[in-house]
Image (cartoon, rainbow, N blue to C red; front, side, top):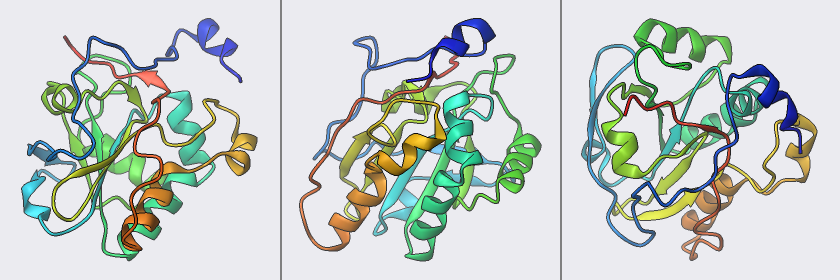
Length: 203
């Protein structure tokens, strides 16, 4: 696993689960929230009632996020999900002045650069929604079913690495969970350890 360069760069550090964060429970209702998206439009989780929703915590400057965007992994997952009628909400909980924080314009540039296709990119600068969900890392993923119940929460895949070559060997947890939900099955891996850069909260 390629973590050594992070210490030298000072950009980010690996962050795993921490008892200091609350988080929803798999099998329980997902907390509702309201945020403004990159185009200035209000978005709520409840407006997507009846649809499966993916939440993806994002930091454009994080090496782990870059791995999954530069390789096309996350954009590919977004495209497959949204084309199937699934809602994909990318959330940035980085505080203003912190590494990775974006405004609406920068978020739009990020989406365009990687040909990403989330339903919306949401700005959570005060970190309220991040704390509500216990988001610890970028990326950190949640899958919410059409009834509004959390069915998956954790890492994007099974190999905690910044190496793009690991993608082919890793289990991609979100597509797996979405396929199982579509088939009416129980999600076989409902939780996993999130990995990546720690979310840059203001407090």
